[in-house]
Image 1 (cartoon, helix red, strand yellow):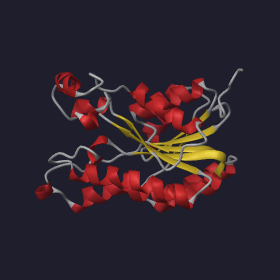
Image 2 (cartoon, one colour):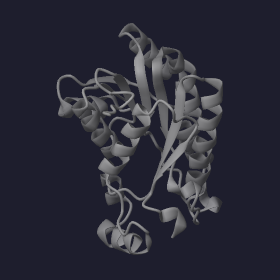
Image 3 (cartoon, rainbow, N blue to C red):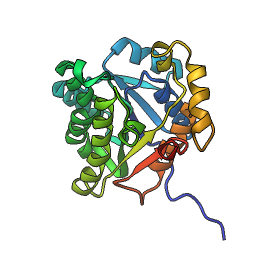
Length: 246
């Protein structure tokens, strides 16, 4: 007996918040290959528009600042006018790292806006626009499960995401709400963080059960899997090569 996937991404409308990132680009590329209709959203209008243009003329862009409810509301109004949405994915993040003794309130608030407060407001303004069998997908991260010095803000915000999706899945049902928790992913963000990311990656890969670091395509594949499965909600999918156990 032949079995087909219960849900397809063909012609589904997907909004990716944080659309200027490497992971957003990988996800958008995969979604387009599956026949989805993609819109990128971001605070930096020029960067987001350029990212959309690089993906093709069919990709739209919209301004959306997770630290501003008015911006989120305005973006939702645009999506509503365009006919609604099937899936919303937020890959947005804001670094608030550093030793506790040196953390500043402004940086902490920005980190929580990107990962916790912003997603709550996205749910507030966009959940009513999500079509049947649609979903919200947010991004957690390894620091919540493997805390280390200097990453208190990252651990707290990523842990908050995982708790948040469980709560939203219950309140917004039957709209599904899930999270992805990536491990170390080889993106251009690392270029500005460490002098030699490849040496760091070799060290990380040596101890990780998967014996490598991740690629944006690994994260995109996991995201698509959550988007198409109508029986997964309230969950955090770990895409970290087993790094939590190493």
